[in-house]
Every structure is written in structure tokens, then in C-alpha cells.
Length: 431
Ligand code: ATP
Ligand code: MG
View (cartoon, helix red, strand yellow):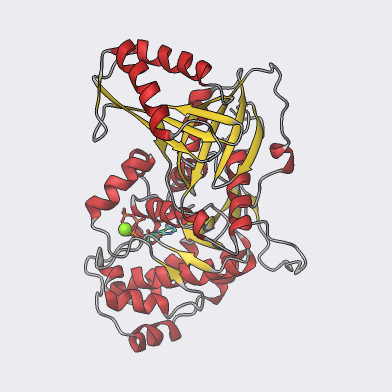
């Protein structure tokens, strides 16, 4: 859903007492547990990868992950989230959409894998009933029973359980046992007072929960690269805000619509955030008339960064993120990336620096941004592009050019025209 942009005031004071919520923007109301209306429910186990390794900070990482999971699963009837040893159990009312729950969990960063589980008491008979029904469904020629007995006081050994359940599946399905590469696996987990059975495990995206690695202002263009860079930073736990530069009113607003759509795809069921829209046209017009043509793109980029840094500081972001890629174009030669680094004090994070373009495209397709990225739009850096941009400029040269360029008025004017749009799920009941 798109909202009308509102103007932001870059000069307003930041309240130093405001706590930054790592999972910023998630309304408490969205986390209020719903009660199971039917008494009947499904359960899921969620396992986390690196979160388990963070010793001292583990509770913090786990809490963040749980909040992100709860945010992702809003509206799906999840009424219980339990932190167990090394895993999280989710309980969902039978009326909730189970397939949608699996789809959304697969997008929550920090999740290594997850499965829908059947829970029984220690008596194996109901387990056999369920497993027998699965065996009757067939669809596999070989299978394995995998058993983990985490509760050592259970009266049967793992091998005994596997033999008993294995012969049941064999006789009901006609499939053969293959412990190496079976077509179907059935998992048994013996816990304190419970036996768990499941058959399908789904991989999550891995990485770290969004909100655990600090805030970054991500420069989002309408191209293929920057959405992929955003995904990589989300995956390492950064909370992102977005900034997009456009040349409206000198060009149309197509890039704004496109980047808004891209930001929505990237944040869907993950996080609420903002995108800042900056009209760069006034500055570009001045640069085109007063600076050497070959330096135009470099100058556009340096002013973009200066504005981004102001926004980033105001929003308490610790870095600026970009989809730049070594030697992809003239403004991304090693020379020029260095010139860009010299423009601002905040670090510039470039997660795609060493990727090949085909690797970036494959990832854009996987995360669902590619089809939007290839739609046509008016790119502000393509505005009055010189035929032969400089590729190996030096810091002395660019400083010399900038010292002769008087853009103070345009710069100040642009700062008053920055708009901000909310990004992310807006309706807490959204399905
Ligand atoms: P592609 O290279 O796929 O055409 P791109 O978004 O990477 O798209 P580049 O010209 O390579 O475009 O720009 C390098 C980086 O600079 C982008 O990844 C993005 O982070 C930033 N950038 C470029 N143009 C804009 C813009 N109009 N608004 C915000 N950031 C931008
Ligand atoms: Mg690029």
C-alpha cells in the first residue's frame, strides 16, 4: 500500500532520551497473543543458526528473533511462542493459514530451518497411528527414520524406536529403508514428557535477526543492485531505512513509484521503516551548467552522499549502505569509490562490492525484486549524462572543482523538500 509522502524537518532536534527499538516500528498491539479459539491447533519448531552462537548476547538475539517472528506471523492465529532449549515452538490455531505461516517464516532472518510438528505423550501408539497414515499416503520409494532421544530416561533406546517405527512404515508403504539418501525422512524427537514427529523440514534464510546489528541508511535506486544490497544487510541483522534521489520535477516520478514498490517487497512481513525521497534536480541543473561535463556523475554522487549523511545522522543510522560494485561503471572504479568515501565521515557499506553481475541478478530473482527492477524508469544519475565520464579522477581535482561550484542555495533548498514515506506492513491485522 502506498501512502502520500510527508515532508521531514532535518533541522528538528533529536530527543536524546528516545530509545531506539532494534525492531523499530513494530507496534506492541501486533504482538498481543491471540487465544486459541478452537482448542485445536498446530505446532511448529523453529531453529536458529548463528543466534545460538552468541553466548552472552544470546537472550537479546533470541528476543529479537521472537519479536520478528511474531511480527511476520501477524494475522495467522499464532497464540503461543515458546522459547525452548535451542529452538522456538509456535502454536497456531487450526483456523490460521498454515501454508502462509510456512511461507512467511521462510523470510525471517535468523531462522535456520523449521518444521510443522506433531506432538504426543510418551506412549508410542498414537505416534504409530500418525506415522502409519503418512506411510499410507506413499509417494516415496525409500525412507529413513531419524530418532533423537534428548530425554535419557525414556524407556526405549533410539535404535529400538527406529526399528519399531521403521518396520511399521515399511509394511504400510512397501518402500525400502535407505539411511544414506532416502526420498523421505521421518523424524522422532524424544523430549521430556513429549514425543515429537515430523516429516518435512524447510530451510529459512539464515543470517541474524533484523535489528540486532544497528541501523543503516540504504541508498535505493530503481536498479537491480541496491535492493540486493538491502537484502544482504537485512540478512546480517541491520535495520534499514531507505533514501531515494530523483530528478522530479525535471523528470517524471516513475523512479519513486518503483523504489517504493521495491522497498515494500524487501520489508514485507519483516519490519516497518521509512523511505526518504530527495529531489536532486535543482543541484543537478547547477552542476550541468557550472561544472565540467565529465565530472557530472561523480558530483551528483558526492552530493547525494552528503545529503544521505545528514539524513542518516538525524535518523541515528551508523552507516550508509549502497549497491555499488567494483568497476561496474565509471563511478565505481576503485579510484572513484575512494573519492566517494572521502565525501562523508560515516562508513559506506557495499555488500555487493565483489559480486559478478550474474550473481546479483540471480539473487534479485530469488528475493523477488528483479521483475520490478527491470521496469523502465527515469534514473536521476542518467540525467544529462556525459558521453565520456572521468574514470580516474583524483581527490585534488574533485575538491578543486567543488571549490568553484556554488551550490549552497540549491543544497539548502533541497533539504527543505525532502519527503518521507512509511514502508512496511501498515495494517497490524494484514494477512
Ligand atoms: P544497476 O547497476 O542495476 O543499474 P544500481 O542501483 O546499482 O542499479 P548504479 O548506477 O550502479 O545503480 O548505482 C550504484 C549505487 O548508488 C546504487 O546501488 C545505489 O545504492 C546508489 N544509487 C544510485 N542511484 C541512486 C538514486 N537515484 N537514489 C539512491 N541511491 C542511488
Ligand atoms: Mg549498479
